[in-house]
Amino acid sequence: MKPEYKIISDLIEKDAKVLDVGCDDGTLMEFLKTNKNVNIRGIEISKEKVQTCIAKGLTVIEGNAEFDLKQFPNDSFEYVVLGQTLQAFINPETVIKELLRIGNKAIVTIPNFGHWKVRLDLLLKGTMPITNSLPHDWYNTPNIHMCTIKDFVGFSKIINFKIFKSLALINENVSDINHSNLIFKNLFGELGIFLIEK
Amino acid sequence: MNLKQNIKTLIVKKPLKLDCGQTISNFPLAYETYGSLNNEKDNAILVFHALTGDQFVTGINPVTKKDGWWSYAVGSGKSIDTDKYFVICANVIGGCMGSFGPSHENPMTKKIYGTDFPVITINDMVNAQINLLDFFGIKKLFSVAGGSMGGMQVLQFISNYPDKAKTAIPIACTSSHSAQNIAFNELGRQAIAADHNWSDGNYNSKNIVPDKGLAVARMAAHITYLSKKGLQEKFGRKLQERDDLKFGFDADFQIESYLRYQGSVFVDRFDANSYLYITRAMDYFDLVKQFNGNLSDAFKDTKAKFFIISFTSDWLYPTQENKDIVIALNAVGANVGFVEIESDKGHDSFLLNVPNFLKALKNFLDKSYAEKHS
Figure 1 (spheres, each protein chain N blue to C red):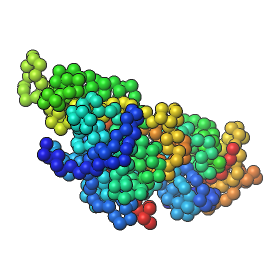
Figure 2 (cartoon, rainbow over the protein chains, first blue to last red):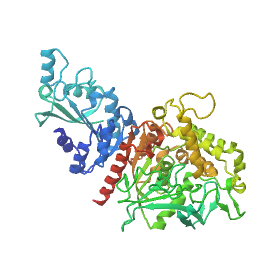
Figure 3 (cartoon, rainbow over the protein chains, first blue to last red):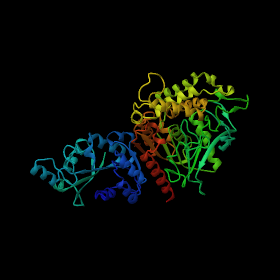
Figure 4 (cartoon, chains in turn blue, purple):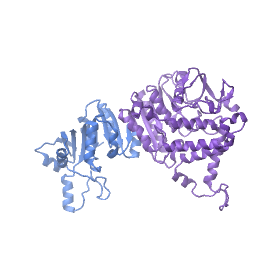
C-alpha cells in the first residue's frame, strides 16, 4: 500500500461520501471503507483495474476523468480524491475545478518534480529525469503536466482555490508545508498532499 | 405442441391496465425457475429475456430441445449461480412460449387474436411479471437482470417498483429506442407483412405460417446482433461447400448460408405476430419521455445498487447509450457501477462466452450478496 494512503485517510472524516478519481485497483477505496466507514465510489480508466475493483465489491465506474467528471452533480461528494494523476491530464485546470465543483473538499497528491534527485538527474545527465516515482522515458510517459510542490501552491493563486492543508512526504514521514519551509519541502518532498477547497 | 405441457403457468387474476388503455385479467404468465428459494426468501433473481428469448434461461429448453438462451451465464457455479440464487424468468406477455399473446384465443370471439391482440409495452410486461413476487411470497428480489430488451425491463422495473430489488443489472441496453433501432425493427415487421401467408395476421385460422417473412426478419435482425469485425473474422468471403462462385443466387458465401440457417430455425420456434408485438414494445420504449425528458427522475426513489455493462462492439445499443443511464443515475446520487467489456462479438456478447463479462457479472452478484449477509 502506498504510504500516502494513511495520510489521505487521516484527512477524511468518518462516514463521509467520497469519490476516488483514478481509483486504480481500489486499494485506497478499501482502506478508506475499513478505516473511515466511508460511502465510496471510484472512477477508473483501465478496464482491467475496474474488473479488479468489482472483484473487491467496490462501486466503480469505468471512465476517463478528463471528460466523465461532468456527469456528477455539484457538491455530490464531501471529498474527492485525486491521487498522483493530476500531471497526466490534458487540462489540469479544468480537472481541479471539476473536483471542487462535485466535492466540498478535494485531496490532491502530486509527485514533486522539484525533488532534488529529479533536479540533479537533469543537471548531471542532461536527460529527462527517471526516478522511482517517475519511471517513464520522456517519449512514453503519461505524465504530460509535471509540476512541483511550489508550482501547485502557485497554481492555487492563479486559478483561485484555497489550500486548507499541505503536507510533504519525505522518506515515508509526513510534515506540514508552510510559507517559511516551502523552498526546503520543495527540494526534499517526494510527494505533495493537498487538502483544497473552493 | 404437446411439448408445451412442460410449461409452468401462473394465471394472473388481478386486472392489469395496459398502456394502450385496455385491461386484461385472468391471463396466463408462463415462467420457469432454477435453484431454490431460501428460507429468508432473499436470494431471488428475476431475469428478463430479450426479443426472441423465453423463460427457459438455462439447461435444455424442453420445447426447442436446445440450450437455454443464457446458459453461459446462468447455472450451477456460473455467474448467476443457481446453487446459490433462485432464478425466476417469465415469458413476456405478447410472447409465444405460453404467456398471454397474439396466438391465444380471444374468449369473446373464440378466434385467435392475431393482430386484434392489444399492443403491449415494456411497462406492461414488467407490470405483469411483478405478480410473480406475490406468487412466490418474495418481498424483495436480490436482483433484477437482463440484456437488450431484458435490460429495458430492468430499468422499467426499478422505475415502477423502486424498493422491490436490492440490485439491478441492465446489460447492453438503452433507455430509449433510437431511430436506427426502430428502423431495423420496422424492416423485420415489413418482411413479415410482405409474406402473403401473413394474411393480415390471420394465418392461424388458415393453418399456414408466414415463415419466409419471419425468416427474413430474423436474418436482418441477426446482422444487427453481430459486429462487422466478428462477421469478417468468422466468415470473411469464405465459400459454402464449393470451390468457386456459381454465378447464380444460391448461397455461394458462408455468411449467406449461415443467415438462411438462422432464419429457418427461428421460424420453427417463434410466432410471427409475437415478433410484431414485441418489436413494437421495444420501439415504444422511451423511459426518458415517460419522465418528461429527465431520465434521472425514473430512478430518484430507488436505493437499488446498479451495475451497468456494455460491449465495445455493440452498435445496436452502443456504450454511449448505456453510459447515459449511468449519468442519469449519478445525477440522483444512485449507487452505480459501470464497465464496458472488450468484445468483438457485437450486441450478442451478453449471450455468449465472453469471460470478462461473465467474471464481472459473477463478482458483482456474489460480492453484493455477501455484503448483505455479513
